[in-house]
Length: 371
Image 1: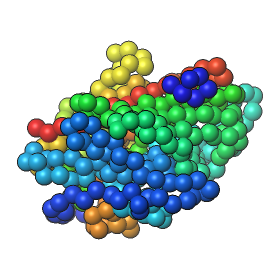
Image 2 (image 1 turned 60 degrees about the horizontal axis):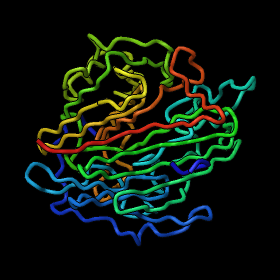
Image 3 (image 1 turned 90 degrees about the horizontal axis):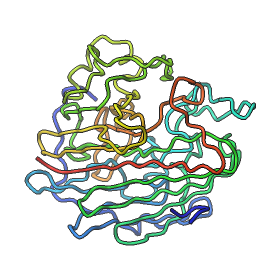
Image 4 (image 1 turned 120 degrees about the vertical axis):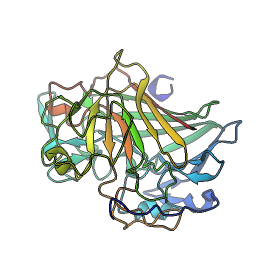
């Protein structure tokens, strides 16, 4: 630890590129808001590589073999820093903060004060605001081939949040090919915090088409229903006998056409799931995803109490990615470990308040393999 202490639902799958081409670091070396951006490579002894930029702490590229050894990128992204700066989908691969997900009406009460945040997802605040952590240049230090440390100082009042917040995020590529993301933060004044990572996955390959055939299992018996603006109602509802029951492996698209108000509100899946935790704060399996054609499997472990499942409902083909192919409707999914949306306004949810002299610490692990 550093810081102060030391398209259409049944579309035909599109062919991906026959050969994976890694991103060029030179295309990421520029200046943004007075700081230098760059591209960093994590690599282990098994020749696994993951590419990350310090602009927004984004996972740019994650090449992975399918069951036959064919390499594809499994995350959506761009070949150049300009792609990210000019994208319609501003969260591709990014670190999210100070607060991942939504805060109702862009306001919350703390310390006897009411704090007003930018309403960048009207009428609500989303993912830390316009200058959220996805849109800043982090100070980067590559500690080793397998470890990248990113740090950012978020000043008191930034995007409306109280307290000077020091944040450190480490990306660690493990010997067994797991990618660990380790988050630490400290504050000098009482504040709220909810950090997460926002890669857009397609295990068939980033340009392979819709993801509705991916088989998803989420370790959650409950979820948090939302209103029409995607703010939780405060209810913690059972998933049983609903389209939100992923307690056993189910194709993502299997129940999207069911008549269900929650699916209508989200335009599909865009909901927080309440994880079945054996022990609060323990690193436990949250989700398992299998793509039958490639054989790729993604497992996500987290210390967090919840995970947001988003089915790419707002992708619309307006962004063309690294493969030169537009990213269409539902051509990716996100699974974002987190505390619950709008927790500062929901006393029944786990607290997201961070006090001075406390450490915020959470860990997420992405495990990727084939079968």
